[in-house]
Length: 218
Image (spheres, one colour):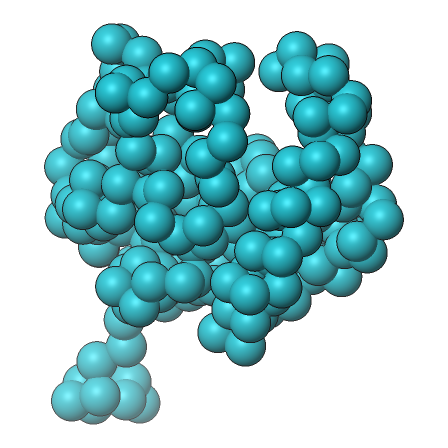
């Protein structure tokens, strides 16, 4: 059976990573690999720290698409990858990598995940996690100030100048590519249960395909 790829997109702070974790945890009977698209930002080592802080990280041009797509293709082919590790404090890719072995199910999430057709074509199921803009902003402020050590003024300025405009230009339009839209963010347990049930049915169908040429048992 070919590995099954679940793509989860949505705006920054929408709860897509929470949905991805819940889906992965609910599929405990399967082997699951988890890929975060945030690890695949380009390595702007040639820029100064001040210049890196000014990069529009919500634009598709900041993604290392060749590496990201090649890794998805390898996982889809049942091969292991060495996923990069990105440091969100320095805005640089670390020297270390994380080995991700092939799995029956690969869950991948990212705000710009569905902007590239090649990625959409690799996903067996495409999920868009939706949440109100004010809730997404509050979550982003809490994350960036507590986990990434950024001052509040910088977080708000980045949201107004790049995050919100890029969401409207690139992220929100990709909702139309989704097979499933999850409202109210990442803690929608009913939606997660429905998604997991659908994935399990499709996995079972792939394991036990019916043979149309086989004669029915009398």
